[in-house]
Image 1 (cartoon, rainbow, N blue to C red):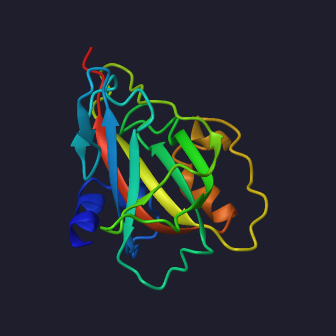
Image 2: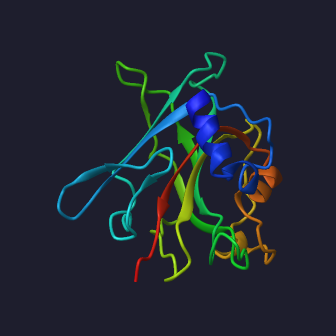
Image 3: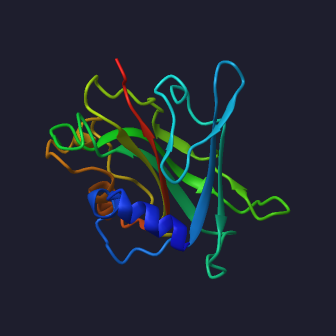
Length: 196
């Protein structure tokens, strides 16, 4: 957990995306992309993937929890990917850019090591791979997993990719999650850059 928090703070995912500076993750991700050449790449703790390597949805998205208090038989979760650096880390005009949203994920099943697959939920915003403009430096692509309240029956709509449809620079996943009373439980990120 300390390694995750250190990376999130060093790369300013906290507070740029995760506004709660007291955030304590209760889980960790194992996210893998598979390239067209069948090369498997880990996307975690600030690893680097080219836009081409991450153009398709990750082939494996797993989470493992350290907190035994979660009721994984009954709780449902939401997984998102967002870019706080659109069009660049210093220009937040289009930030955050919504890359993926999946809701109502059931995490009740785990393998022998405790890893739980993400991917059986309802996709409400289809995956869009990294598309950083040239000469805008490395972009952070942030994965977030939220626990849903049990009484949530309808999510507020994600109205667009730029600023998650809010039309306010620097706004995105945190605002949408707050509107839906989602509780952040895990976070991670990777970098990607257009080197043209």
